[in-house]
Length: 258
Image (cartoon, rainbow, N blue to C red):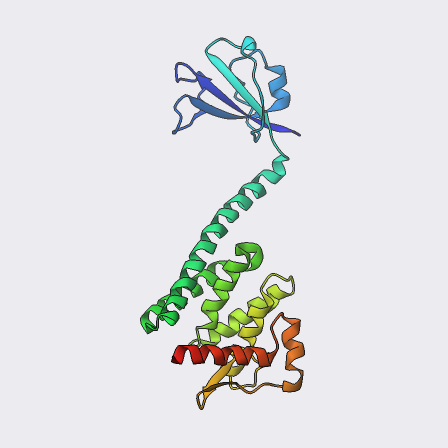
């Protein structure tokens, strides 16, 4: 059954039927849920019967002053399938939440990168950032691409990537990202970095060669499992060849030393 909602504007600000509710923001606006089948039989009445109570609605307006006393103006509108109404409202709410979440994640990531870039690392600040990303993941799960876009998802990953003091947390997030990867809902290169990070922090050789160390003034890769096939694995997740990666890391180290 198609359902409607009626809105009435009253000049005297008082509706004769107490079942109508007043909008606190707009004192002249009253609303009442109305079944359109009942409404069609009551078009000449300025006050709908009290037993009409089912509904939902907004949309195309029906406006006919001639059917009612001059002090009443009724707006009637058809909406989408009422069964979808609640899910649509929830979806819009989620979209708003995720937009705010993305903004926060990028702000947290910027703080993290700023500490590293400017050489003013603060462990206390790092702990705060880690605590906040934990709270976010506890509430939402891992922020995937479909939730917060590629930038937002990458920001969340980077904060987890740097939480080396909490391996248990990194392992937990890795499981969440692996699950999301089945739906192509995380950045594959981010996932590769976290896989390597967790393995290295667990004392195991890495898979993709993303983790390196400084040795005798040069950047060298940490131990890699099946190193001869590492470039194939790197290519599968969109990473450049290992030799290029290490070469660029050495160039960056040289620049910093100047």
